[in-house]
Image (cartoon, rainbow, N blue to C red):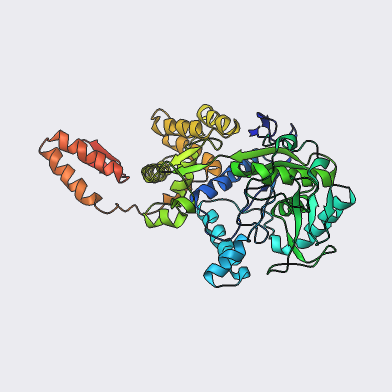
Length: 458
């Protein structure tokens, strides 16, 4: 059974009990005001791998991944951020309506996840279209004594009413200090209280019993997950930066509403660096999936490269690692196409079991890929058997390894000339040059073999 590191309990645990037949997972989705960069996409690969493994274990998986198109403010570092809505700010910068901006970047995100072979969620609720769920939940929190309205029409969650606040991040209420950038909001009973509803007459506001305004960012996920997945959610995923305050606030809201622990396992993916620096607009170090494609690399090379590190390890991605992943991807597809022409044989049970065990063990994808490389090179295993194993495992890895089956194989640019040069070097018995050219061809994804009849390639 799949086991994952639970951020709240600080240990690796099975994600569902023995005998379970289903898994319900919530994934914090994108705020649709810009293109997602490959660091953002790493978080969604985490949930996709969980889903694929669970499905291979015959669990019925239901996933909810929200779309935040309102309520996420530019300054979201404090417990109760203040500032401008990210979507509205981008709409003003581009001179377009906020709804148009939101749909444009939502569609771009969906295209990127499809290019990375991520399976779509069963539910993709938009914040702007589920305001009624949030208002209903806020009303329940007020009724239960966990929230209070202020004279201006805002509503705050009373942090002190949830004693176990801080179990995910370690930021306990008695150790939290007021934000250093501004004075404590006088409307709050306690400085760590946060807004569920914010009074405003700006764009993208709605009428409620408390007044016109817009939702706080954190209430969105609570309302959507409880309505669409129910009061018992097996796994909640997100980036490590969401532990606090977003997931702490979300847990408090959901549990206070339901009266019990809603999420069994909180699972977080670590940050991605690119060339040793944080990937962020402020550092000018943002790499989009389209940038990868413009370099002539398969987008699924990103998926493979990301799996070379465990999801909860910080990772440094580079163009060199992406190019290496692209070469590996093309070589494996060529090998699978080659093996497909051999008689089919049963999968090698022991190597496949070891790879599946690595994936079950807190998504140890680096070990799984090392074992897959060993299987690729093991000539004692029949080609037809390796073919079946690679196709079976690709249902989890999602690398589209059968892509070249039946496809006419065409040499990459420049390879034909290198093959001719190498044939001349072999004829002249210049083995040093022949070996160098073999290595250059391998860099292009062309494997060369020497036979009594001459060199062959794949």
